Image (cartoon, rainbow, N blue to C red; front, top):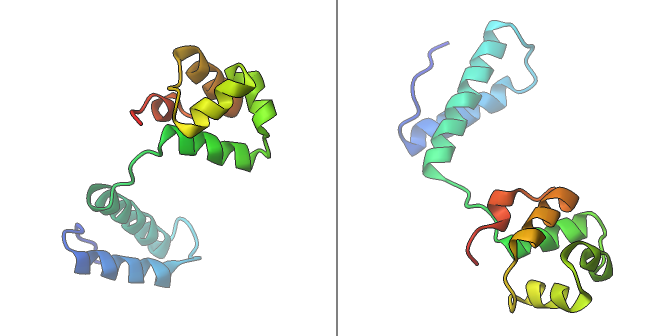
Length: 118
């Protein structure tokens, strides 16, 4: 097992190939240890080179609504009025702090996502 830092795209590709070869190996073996270390290195490289921006607050709400089969009427119970739901989802009205708190609590959407500029 010869592991080194992932510094280039080619290093990244090689690490991914090796991970694929090791997939399904047993934990607490030399191959299992190699797999864990490579996964950690790949995650670090990808976090630095391919960051995933946090989602747009409105898209996060829509996604959660779809995931939970939540209607606009049901969302209105969380954010206030039915007309407010339309205004928020269309971008005509910004989320207020009380709305953010309720969405965070009721729909489990991270507050960091809901407070982003949009």
